[in-house]
Amino acid sequence: IKCKKRNKGSESIKVVFRVRPLNSREKQDDRKIATIAHEEKGIIELRNPSTDGGYDTSKTFAFDAVFSENSNQRHIYDVCAAPVVQSVLEGYNGTIFAYGQTGAGKTHTME
Image (cartoon, rainbow, N blue to C red; front, side, top):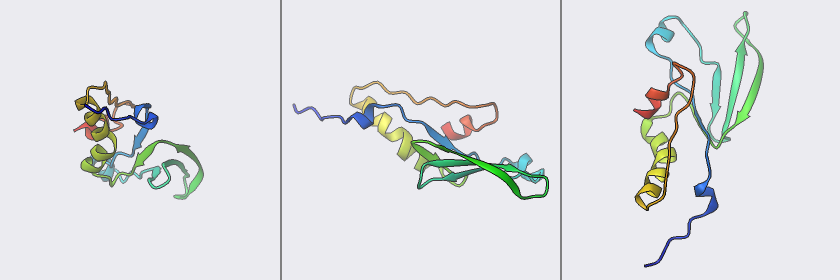
């Protein structure tokens, strides 16, 4: 039996950020998404809406992967969960941990 060599990158903690789509009430209240996902760069940009409808300043944060409000469940599973599931099937330990404020979209992401 040959054992597959596992690379160190597959054994590390990865931090992923998903922008949750607006729910029906937020849409009804004409809320805007202030968090912009730059998926190709792994960057989240937080914009502070000003009172005149524009944007004041923005801050950026880097993650191992980011997903916009338009990302579908299957794509997020394929990128984030499938490698963990495969490792577990190969006998390794694996954990997927959803963290965030109430209403941030943890349940939406894990469904």
